[in-house]
Length: 548
Image (tube, rainbow, N blue to C red; front, side, top):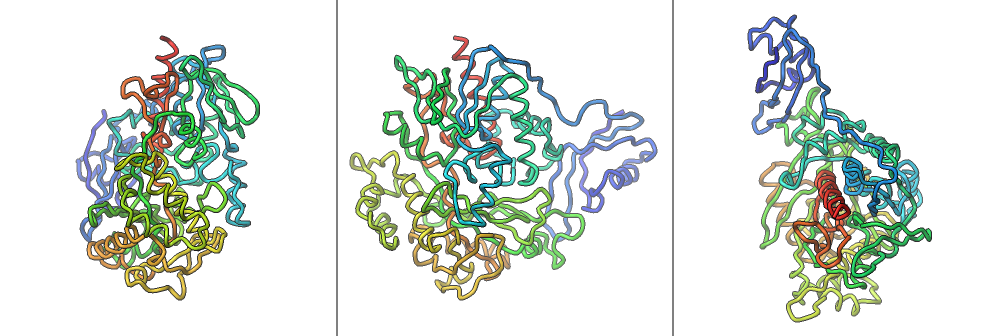
């Protein structure tokens, strides 16, 4: 017999199956010897009060053993010789598109400009060690995309866009822990996700699909007003409809699309910093205890959001027990991101702290001028001013204006970091007081930090809102606003700076048949799970297009 219960237990009671059996036997009047297994279906932490509780939804197997696997497997047939669909990009959008195409009997051909996930790791290490960035193999480009080394958080609010459970089950089928099916904020971990991605690639190959690394799409083949395939930097041509899943940092792709009249539009982004606290301090604040998390609780998370002067200021991609990494994808750029290993066991916790920016903000001449004038030694200031104004007509924002703004901020940050990957940084409370930090706390950012007056050179419409946001967050959560925390600049790649327009029904480009803009880079997703779901939807649309 299987019983289902909703439980509210102490952390030590939820720590193991045996302790749960003892609790359930005692509370529900069951003989513990008859409880063969307890399967957790949902798990969340309630830390609103001083006493911390774990909320659980469990299945209790009395006098019987679980017969089904803890996750649902998907069958993938052999598709050699079937109609081909080209997938540009092997991030979560591209990989899930490929797997879904195989389910549907289509032949996926994946082209990825970067290296496979194992070789890519060597290039990432070189960024920290030698301050050298391979423009084709970095934290943004390579197998797994930006998500592969961004720690594998799988929480999404985009549940109406697809089957979240299907995405999580596919991850489990390829080696992820089944805990991602139960946790309220599931997480695979930077150390575990690369092997999962490699297993997904092996499934694609074993079913007859193709994966081509170090192969960059240079041109779309357009014949009779339809996409017929792609040309690549290797000289190879691949023919078929194209799912374009290039990620939010493929600026050369955006430029090619714009130059060739492919309809796109500027969209809002968020820009700010990585804010890093000692993880013990965050544990103490969130768990209301000087002892921090103790033995049975995970590294604490937080989420903050405020409206400041008409724009959102919020925490983004919070990484408890994690580290900050250099995430630039080309020369003369400095960008930071955060990640966590599966055990979330480092001395630091970080999150993006960002300010919402809308395309129309770039039409305000005072905002543009403030941004430009803070850029030291800019020989192209006048050109950049025109780009930032970006108006093709009065009141209209240039399609590439937001992308250029990202580029400009990253270049300034690189200059402030002594033209290396050493990141400009400032203590949090000093920033709100407009004081230079004469020393900086220890940090997880391995290329190193340099003290810099972020309050001075960040554009005021960002720095002023960040400062007000921090002061409000400090009132919400006592101890959060502190000089033990350090701001590390700059976080710009929270999402794509534009959207490639597509039909809401067919998911094809609005004017170009056979092109399926996909995932985060196309402006239709915001993380691993939502990109995976969009990849599946684009695969279904591409299969329907081929079958027609």
